[in-house]
Amino acid sequence: MKFIATNVDDSYRVLGERISAQQERSGFALDSYFYRSHLTYQRELERIIYKSWLYAGHISQIPNPGDYFLFDLGEDSIIINRDASGEVHAMHNICRHRGARVCEDLRGNRTSFVCPYHGWVYNDDGSLKVARDMNLLEGFNDADFGLKPVNYKVFEGLIFINCDIEAPDWSSELEKLSKPIQGYDLANAKIAESTLYKVDANWKLCLENYLECYHCATSHRAYAKSHSLKALACQAQPLNDAMMARAEEATAVEGITDEIVEYYSLAKQFGGCVCHSRYALYDGYVTGSEDGKPVAPLMGGFKGYDGGASDFHLGPLTFMLNYPDHCVLYRFIPRSLTQTDMQLVWFVRGDAEEGVDYSKKRVSWLWDQTTQEDEFIITRNSEGVNSHFFEPGPFHPEFEELSMMFVDWYLKALGPVSDKD
Ligand code: FES
Ligand SMILES: [Fe+2]
Image 1 (spheres, rainbow, N blue to C red):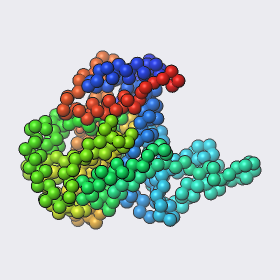
Image 2: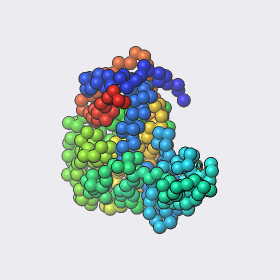
Image 3: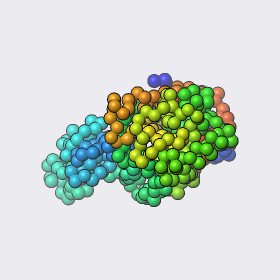
Image 4: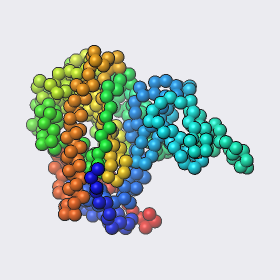
């Protein structure tokens, strides 16, 4: 790992001043302070990450009673499991006695969670089952010491969590995506491949990179050859118009072209972005693969190819790029000030058989390649913005519009900073 200096002159007063200065330079990239300040990072966790809907996993990871997996974010660990009655739970992996992790293995099947430290035992619904000899403590009540619950929501088989237990229900927002997403039948889909890219860069650099396609033409040759998003809207318009005109009939998915634009400050609920747009692939490509040819059977309700791909935003840090024969989920999880987990998950039709209907390599080729290219440019970007002489430049008004919108939302979420902070 490359060492990144993160010492800055810091205090809440400095943070407040930096936010104001950045807001006055609207339309410009973030100052290096925001990538180097530990104080800012802690505030991001409290104000943004722990209050947003984040993809934790897919329902196929916990098909049976007792199945569980861990989802790590920041320094935290969350248990997602299915209890004996079949109900899903999300809870903090922190013992209510003195805080040890109660579960170490990343996935498995358990009817209870036993803390390795002093042996408190939790049921699979998180309630405290046994606290050894704690009856000696007057007034101790097991019911007060269950594992802390985490808010969760299952949509189309995708499990999202929100550490803010008071966060409003996200259902009505997600429902807006029902039509364009239903054709993929993600609830019954299968994970063909899943890869974790541990990137030595602040989470915002990873996200800002994902949100713009200005770099696509220069950094992603395979992607740019096949996906029209790399071009200006006016250049891609004839291709997009033709694809949109045939999409419903070719795919037999009603509402596949519906556009929903509720990201960042436009979202009706904090940390609950919901967006969908469809754009064309270049002639000769029906899907996101090395040669443009199908790599798996058609998803769920699809009856054919329209030469298009669907972009979804599901919360501020989770995205999907869905093709008629496979779907790619992309999520960004901060792990520290200078480390980010980029997780990619490739879905195929639930009854597709590996080695018969698809190969992991062909399904994942394009986005594995593209993500490795992204990792390269993001870490170069990180080195540059952490340089003493970095001075932020302007965003491109069209290509980088979304990165700009993210920055505006981000600054608003961080501030205002008061004397009491
Ligand atoms: S910390 Fe878990 S039983 Fe003591
Ligand atoms: Fe990229």
